[in-house]
Figure 1: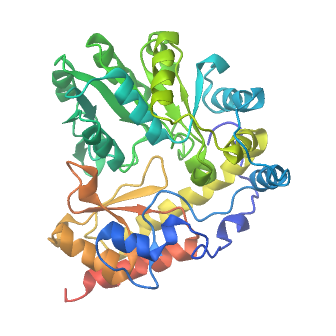
Figure 2: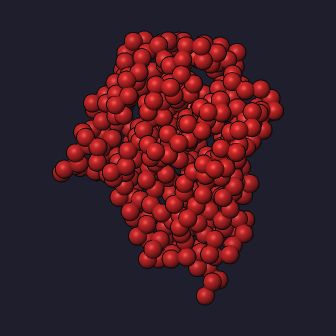
Figure 3: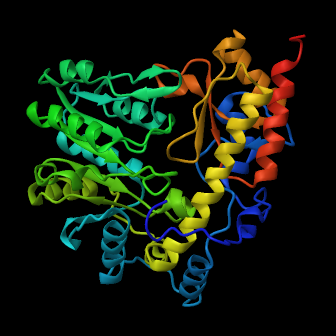
Length: 409
């Protein structure tokens, strides 16, 4: 556990507290939306474990900050002030020992919008954009929707552990039409937390071949055990001159609906081009409550709350591993090193992806993201979100077991 993450005698009752999200317009729990998402109707008593937000209540400091701002009764256009930038600076230094400047920061509505901006600002239609599949599916769709060419650098998998294929990456990077790589760090959905050596090897290949790296580090706080997340740009001053960092408090503090993320771009010329494209795409509007949220999250109170969250999620991950080993031995998985997402391999059942969806998502009513949506290497997999109360997680796992065994005996 990192310094400042003491979990001794911690009370985890706040994470066991359940909320009724069905009538709050929350996408995760909206049945009609899930039916459309899967192109199939799900059970009325579904357990949604698909979209990557959690079912935990926000820490009280966030709730209080939003309530206090709401009491002002006027919610006009806003602009982040010094407190906003200082909060991000504090967090990056406190959590990752990375010293950044307020001049490097651009506020964004989401990390995905930052990827969209970067692709449009620093590549042309037809250019190749490298992604490391299986990977968060918006990486794939944004590349295609912007008229760029998707270049997959599939991760290598052995016994459920994934590694980067540097030899194949070097071949892709040497093609001058491949202009950018989008890095997912920690990786969604496979749960890898990349080592310093892996990141440096990736960066050196890209620098040598003039390939820009845009890093999605939104899961950077969710790392277990002795693992350590390294912001790519923090590893070498040269990286600050040619790469872009994207992050947000959304996954850590369960506030994605407040729509506030940020880019860190130390190179002034790159930042100017990025900011201009943001204006061109009308993605420069700030969320009033999102600004307050960042300032409430990135504090010493946030550090203490995160310690409890990590311990709870780590135990949830252990619960899944033990259940799979004991009750679903034909399912293959490795405990994630980071994120609150488990990557489950159902290949040994021999189901098609459609059959797997029908058994788990529709039959069991446990709504997961189909693995083939993540590109190469995703077939016969499901991504399971474990950011929920433990008893809900156990209920979901028991349902999955029953659905998988149906007509198998």
